[in-house]
Amino acid sequence: WLKRKRFCLFCFARLSSVLAAMPKNKLGGNKAKRAKAGTEKQKKELEFKEDGQEYGQISRMLGNGRCEVACFDGTKRLCHIRGKMRKKVWCNQGDIVLVSLRDFQDEKGDIINKYTAEEARNLKTYGELPDTVKINETDIVDGEISDNGVEFDEGAGVDIDNI
Image 1 (cartoon, rainbow, N blue to C red):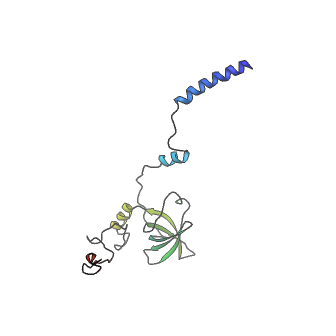
Image 2: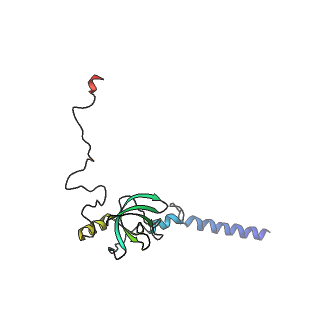
Image 3: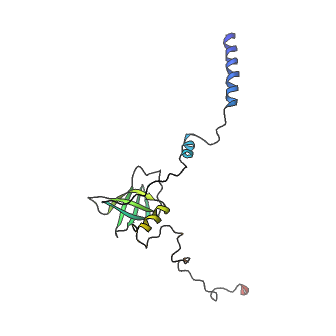
């Protein structure tokens, strides 16, 4: 029994020296390590539409991986985000997407690609997207800053001195 106790004390002494040399994990578990590994952006080739595909802009998110897309051929479609993109590529309202049309249902489709703002601007310069498309909300139309139709009248309102 005494020999085993000495051995355990010896192992404990070696183990504590090894543990003292190991670095402290400050990030969290393996999910944080995976997220850190995928932060670099890769330059990918611009994907143009083919037969059975159409460009569109997300008009509203519906939940459960579905959204309403206003396609540039003039129809609104209920679209489903494909499984490869779910939880990896986040789609928001106003994003430009590539929709795969269904042969048997014209009012439904599948989102197969989301374009970044830079890619959407490139598509617009190539003539793939109409000129009336707003790529993101911060765009300035014809050199003017949009005030959303709000006008302020200096003469109207309450006089602060009379209060």
